[in-house]
Image (cartoon, rainbow, N blue to C red):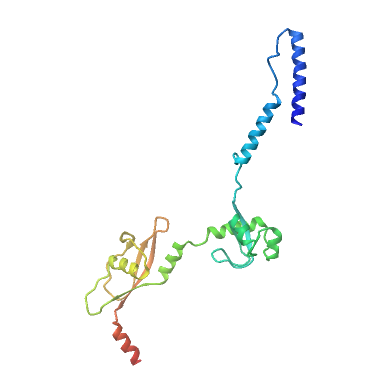
Length: 227
């Protein structure tokens, strides 16, 4: 078809050239229209690029929304709309019947009275507000005091060096000395408050330090046996 069109163009162009030559006396025979060889060359070039994959746009894996049919560890609970990678959904979640595409019909089947758009917005808000591991650690530190044992018979003082050392020894948590804020060293038993500076955004986080009397293991065994 391309060849036929090119031949037609060449025919009309030659007729036009003859007309111009007769009317103006100017020789225009040197000017020629694009021949079929040009289109054949371009076609071969396109075929070569297709074979080599040149100029092809790679399919964007992207992110899609799915509704979980059952609880998936690290992802969400049953009938929750989550955002996942397209490959993860099509290669694992959907084939294993762990999730469905978050269409209107599938949402209705799972008892979710939302449009796909609203469900997607809710899923994004949930992901945005999801607590990070740092937040969970800070919550744990705020609820569970750090227990430091000292001897009642000897003189002792608990300063920030001791607190940092105990965090490292008991919780494997490195707390820089400059991040610990203590008004003064502790010299009494009981609960005390220490503040840890996490970063400029979070600021100071108050945590508890409980100073208790050290009881030797032999004595603990004797008390347990007597009771």
